[in-house]
Amino acid sequence: MFTGLVQSLGRVAAIRPVSDGETGATRLEIDIGDWAHRPDLGASISVNGCCLTVACVSATALHFDVIAQTLAVTSLGGLRVGDGVNLEHAATPMTFLGGHIVLGHVDGLAEVVEIRTNGEWRMRLRLPGDLGSCAVDKGSIALDGVSLTIAGVEDVAPLANHAAHAVHAAHAVHAAESIIDVCLIPETLARTNLRARAVGDRINVEVDYMAKLVARQLRWMSDR
Image 1 (cartoon, one colour):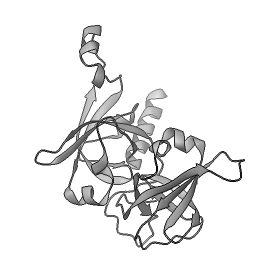
Image 2 (cartoon, helix red, strand yellow; image 1 turned 45 degrees about the horizontal axis):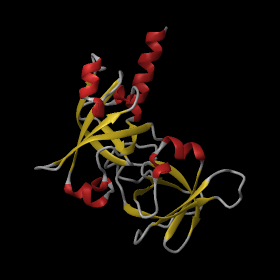
Image 3 (cartoon, rainbow, N blue to C red; image 1 turned 90 degrees about the horizontal axis):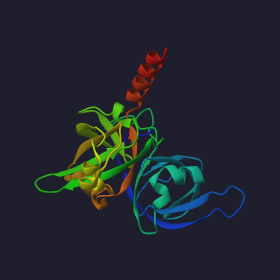
Image 4 (tube, helix red, strand yellow; image 1 turned 60 degrees about the vertical axis):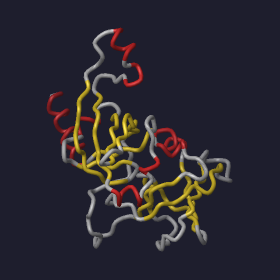
């Protein structure tokens, strides 16, 4: 479990197939710079919001073996050498819960549809599928492992006709999708990789765990 408070900004140092040639996994090497935390082998680390297991520890880097499914359903599959990644070690019973409960189990990829930097940094993102049912105004959400407060939620209806589709093709959304707003303070921009995000980027999203439980219970009750 994590809290969504990023502790260090690492850099991708290398990406290569795991040497055993059997698992089909990819070895991800992250340069951790001056991060003082040195985890044991097998420890859990949040890398851009994905809970990964430490496979090797070197003087300045942590190594993780990432399976093909994780690469396919998260933004880790699009990482390149030199990219910055958000790092957080697992919480303990003594950890201050300054963010919110984050499991490191990515629910999907949110697309950045707008970034405003005049006056305040505000980012708008399109949530995939029915994740919007778990997003509420002033609620919590984890984006690339960063605990953020939702500043607004907009449920977007499907486009009415072909003409509208032609005009708004670049921002077309399907049924059951939602747009959320988050505000980014200078401290968050300085300590995370969110400053480097651009319109069109797809970033890891994990909605609030309690909201998921409630949404699932409501679906179960409605199906009875």
